[in-house]
Amino acid sequence: MSKFNFDFDKYYKEVNIYLKTKSISGDDDAPKIIKKFHKDFTRTLLFCSLEHNKPYEETLEVLSNPENLTDSKILLTNFRENLTEIIKPVLSENKVVMELSDLTLESSGKGVGAGELTFVLFLSDYRYASKGDGTWGSGYKSEVKNGKGASLKTSSVASLRHIDALNDKFFNGHPFGYTDPKLVENHLREVDGKPEIYRQFLKEVYFDVDTTELADKVIANYKNIEEIKFIIGKFAMTRYKDIDGHDNLLMIDPEKKIVVNIFDPNDIRGLGLNFTPRMLRKTDTTAVADGYVNVSIGNVSSNTLANFL
Image (cartoon, rainbow, N blue to C red; front, side, top):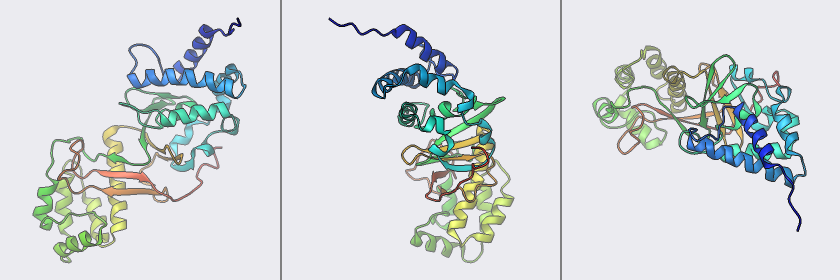
């Protein structure tokens, strides 16, 4: 009878050492989804190493070498790129590494979204953080969102939900910020050429922040619904950064493998983001405050990382 000669103890130890450098632990006190990812990574690396006839040590070595990782300083810029363009060729051309990448894109659970662990593989000094999604450099904090759709909260006071009453008060129940032609027509009829009404409306929706500049922009563009969506979206992006305390917001579409990073929310035009202001509550989610905005990665293409790669 043949005996499979493989030192599993040595293998588990070496994988564990690597993952701990990324703050990913399989210990009992680790979050459930992180323990699951730790186990899945360990199994996937071994299976793919056998499948592609590559020693697992070689894969761990290339992943552990800082020279093979993309500088985390790219997160200090705004960019939109395909994931494979962010990853250095020594990794993107490695079949085992890319199967591990697919694993990170599929891994999700309570507290960890799809793609949230992807960046620990490919960015230098980037680690998983239980309080926040990722940390890098000298204490920088990353927030990671699903590029297929995510919410941006505009207030830390989620309990105040009076947007429907405000729509009744200011617009006779015809909400602001929607794209359906009939809804827009009904809303503008209520405004009746007197856009100054938005000033008080926005002040009451976003009661815990100065909305003077936001109101000026809305009043100047209130008939241009696409521009209104961008104006409110940009405002929400800025507010969310202030409330959450992150340094950069990473968005990744796990299917299309498109990555958008926002370090400066004041310079996001051209990143191809789709914004949908939620100015109507009714049966909508009660998990976030009034006036939140949904954001997703659109279909615009760009190349903004040429100087880093």
